Image 1 (cartoon, helix red, strand yellow):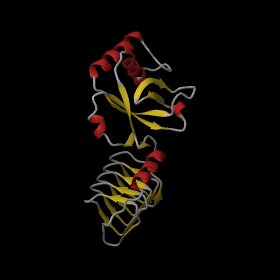
Image 2 (cartoon, rainbow, N blue to C red; image 1 turned 180 degrees about the vertical axis):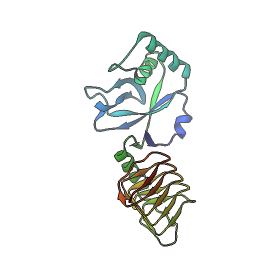
Image 3 (cartoon, rainbow, N blue to C red; image 1 turned 60 degrees about the horizontal axis):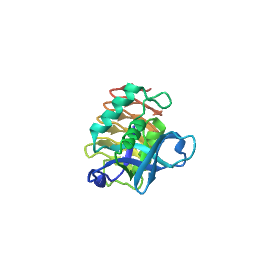
Image 4 (cartoon, rainbow, N blue to C red; image 1 turned 135 degrees about the horizontal axis):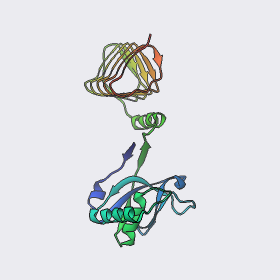
Length: 220
């Protein structure tokens, strides 16, 4: 449940395995990479002491998949665990111990989408400095917003920080700080800080909603 902002061109042109990293203020929450001269020397899962601020973000390029597979099998066979869990970090550390070269690449943006509030915050970050010049009948657009080319909007106020996905139909509504999933229909509603799933129908008054796909809601 993560969105990354990263240039992967140099990664795919590299002959060795690579791990995406990003500097963080509190590395104790993550697996970290200890790097020297551009080469990973050691990987530590959720270190109790400060050994590196380069957090492993969950992007990996493995040039020798067979070595990784062997390390994973060895972990399972020997029941090697950290914090009582099988960790990919431990398998990568085993690769290092088998003299497999691993380097790092920098990840510019690392955005959490696992919770409603973090997904909406990520939506705001990605929409910043973006605008649309789309025009609809009797529609006020307050940038930044994203509106799919085939969205149908009438008599509404959209934005700021609204994402309207493809196939949506919106009428007589105000939508701000929200994400509307594909092929959803919103009628006479005021939505704020809401996440609406795909193929959802909503008709009603002011609400803060978080719905899954294929939902139908009418509020009177």
